[in-house]
Structure formats: C-alpha cells, structure tokens
Image 1: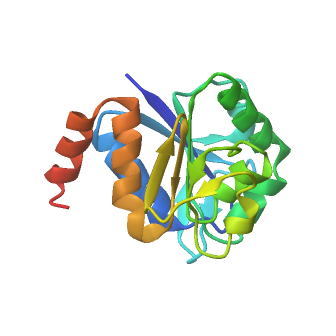
Image 2: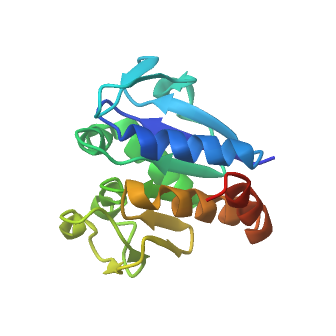
Length: 181
C-alpha cells in the first residue's frame, strides 16, 4: 500500500488540499495530513480550519512514497519559511520519491533548485520562482519524480497524475470516473 503526506501551512488552499486527499484515499493510498507549524488545526486561505493527523515534528524521519503541497497564500510562503519542510523535501528528493505541488507551491521546489531542467507549471505570476524549469502551459506536468499543477482548476488532473505515478493509469482512471469527472 502506498503512503503519501500532504503538508498544510496556515493559509493553504483548502480545495487543492482536500480534493487531493479525498481522491488519493479513494485509490487506497494512505494519506497523512501534516501540520507544518506543529499545531493540529490549520486554517486555510478561505478561513476553513482542518484538523491534521500529525505535526511535522512527528514525521521528520518518515519516508513517504509521495509528498504533496497545496498552494494558497500565505500558505506557500509559510512552507518556504519552514526549515523542517525543506529538509524533508530534500530527503525525499534524494530517494527519488514523488514530489508534488499545485498552484503557488511548485515555487518551493523551484527555490530549492529541484526543478532544474525539468518541465513544470505553477499559478500565473509565480513562474519567476521556478528556477531552472522549462515552464509549460499544461495544467499538470510530470517530469521524473516531480509533479506540478497550475491551480485549483487542475486539482482533478493533479490527483489523477499522482494516483497514476503511485499505482497506474487504470487505477487513476477508475477513481476519476467513479466521481463522474
């Protein structure tokens, strides 16, 4: 069974996070929602509060099959400020685990230099932070272990791409079709 972690910082984009969590769970993927600020309740950019499963201090040494970051502001800025999350990202990148981000959050990977010579996309206006990336116009891009998506409007495709990366296209198609997307 595959295991993914989604990192939530105050100001995250709720729909990007929760839609992804829901669709991955429908695929049978264990998803752990992790608070970046060591508080079990994190409020998103639209004032919706979500209770997380773990705090970042609980999972610093856990290696997941995939790590996921939703966008939103100031959530993405808080992700960049967290040494713990940047250490976790680097550790997962070294092990060639799936690194996924949507909306503004791909900029975290760009700032860390992990998108060099990779195709990537992000929310319009954040492209300058995708250091070294070949920016595309696709809604979702997978290049090696990196999965990036443009915005909330691409959340279904983002989840589909994650499921396909962790399992296969048939499983991803089955989940997406089951919700009549």
